[in-house]
Image (tube, rainbow, N blue to C red; front, side):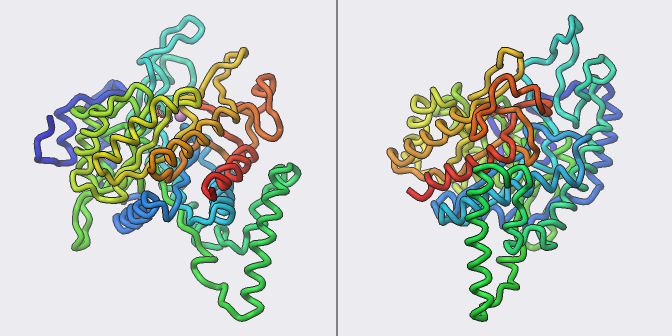
Length: 448
Ligand code: PEP
Ligand code: CO
């Protein structure tokens, strides 16, 4: 299977699924070379910090909140969009921390989530057979032969968009926007008018009062714990040429190779073959790794991938992101939990309640029902408790925008409402209000 020698190009000898068919190999190589000379987007020290926080979550001493777009888009790389996504994640984190009594590790699907796996290489639009849209880093969603032709210049553009996003995230999280002093100001107008917004408002007021009380009795509130926040980035490590180019050797004495395209990388449900190129590439970088696990998994395969990716059983290195669906989780999760427990593996167990709860509404729009999402999460917690394992985090597709992509929730979005503001180019996301509502529900689960 794997030989021991690893280099950032050793994956090239293995089969890589889900890669765009780059039409001009010389052009592609040129772009990968160009990217490999550009500055890293994130740094080894930050990656190690995230890993140690994930190790805490695996022990039940913290909780992972991972979320963002299914697929980021170049055209939506704007300050308001980035700010709204960050804001809803910060609000959810405050809810989980305050109501759930646990520090929350915040990881966005952001600043690099531009590559998508697809079930088929081609799709038929209005009778035209076209290459599938594989994310903005590969091609354009527009349904023409020209737009769908993979173009490696897009890898470079994706790098620059990620850098711009990262820059704003750093400014927002260090420059006061992410300060707990602003916890009330984060409540957006449209959310404020809703029952969920009012719940949040009440909680935010209690936090602000507590901060004021501290100030009154002379406890310093000018501290980084209150004034700054940590926000990490993640994406699916799918296009291996891009990931290879962003992989650098740590220049401090700690050493080792880090994929500096994002803090945490995950391997998708479709690309996690033990002898495949994605596993080969990821085993050699020291980032914390996620692995999606859907209903088609085999226990022995999962165990052998974990053994390849984390031979030292290092805490914080591996996060399992299970996605079985509300109706199937009770069948698929317990055997996995038992096997992990029996093997004594240090793994952070998290739930993606989105990807196996997708269906098409009558209009043909892909959607998900708020109640299915909630129900998969509830089962995830209960099944972990029953097995004596730790439910350590959640993984969402969400946006701070007022979209209508998932049905249900406090406002009872109906299938007919999907057309109002359906913006995603890929999977349906929770909107800001649905996200907050979800966070209040999860806080209840964490507390019990
Ligand atoms: C995703 O997270 O958008 C995704 C494609 O997930 P999965 O690999 O679980 O299908
Ligand atoms: Co998705």
